[in-house]
Length: 193
Length: 193
DNA sequence: ACGATGCGTTTAGAATTATCAACACTCTTA
DNA sequence: TAAGAGTGTTGATAATTCTAAACGCATCGT
Figure 1 (tube, protein in one colour):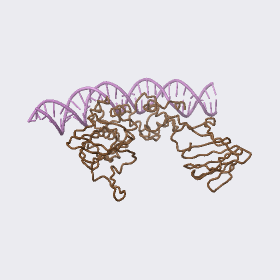
Figure 2 (figure 1 turned 135 degrees about the vertical axis):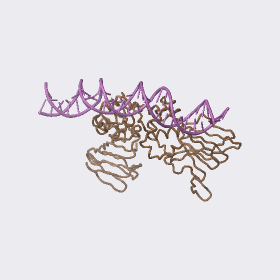
Figure 3 (figure 1 turned 180 degrees about the vertical axis):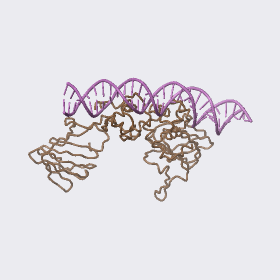
Figure 4 (figure 1 turned 90 degrees about the horizontal axis):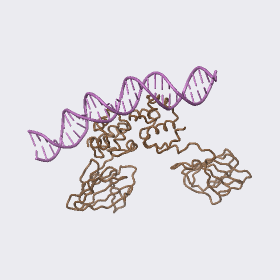
């Protein structure tokens, strides 16, 4: 995990760091990767420390053990800045009215295809009669409390554990007429904000 | 020129053939590339014959002499199947109403995006021996007169109706050594000015 | 015809990289 | 705490790659 803290500027030409990152991202030890690739663990150690510059054939053998192509190895962005895990406190809050809290997962990620929100609807919260519409698709699942969801002509009260999935360009609305708050986790693609 | 006839299936893992193709496409000899890269011509010869598997450091030094990044070297498609030259008869006609004829250059080329220029080359005009290079792709078609076009190691005299399409970072040159002016319609992407 | 020039290839030896086995270190577990 | 299995690192040696200089073969100009 420690190596994942490395700066990503190193990735461009620092083959050793790049290999180490890739290996760790794939959850392999030097010995396990060496065994799969048919090379020695020492060789991988030396390469990762940039004490040698591997031949293409060696590097290819190693990457085959992951497996990963040479093109992908040099092309892909293995930057650790794209975190996998986010603590609850790391979700970024997005203002949306007074009674509604939207907390986004992985706000800093660029060029993504998916957006996930942790939504809290206080009693009386309502996205409004002027139904929401945008491109893409979205889905969600109610965690606690209950919520009335309107999609086009359909309307349903969803309780904890219930879920939905619809095309976002169908007009939709969320409201919580109950005394208890409602918590919902939703995802939509592509991101709407 | 002969090596350009190689099949493109060879490109995937055959580093030697891939290097030779790239070198020839860029119009360099083994010795010239070796001089630029700071390696010996013998090394390049051995690599191109796949008699050795170069170290990353060596390969990088060589590619720096072109110049070309490792990522591009493994990623880019240098397949000769993407023709550079198209005879007038090879332009594909696209129907567009009754009075309009559209003749497209390089119909088979995928994933492109470009913009177009109308160019006139007076007698003696020459973009110069210090070959042009920039990012993107460009193509063109000669309207009247004729023009000598050099792209990497390839050179051809294009007459009215003939055309070209190539990646702009391959050094290129246009000249009109004739007595009559030459009119050319060209397109490039992204726009260089 | 001829030498001069330029091309890719080849070979012996210097330089670099990979292997094998041992080492130091951190965990886990008895 | 001590044994055992896990990890990454290191040193001597074997294997591979790179260099330097020559070779054979074309092409060009005189």
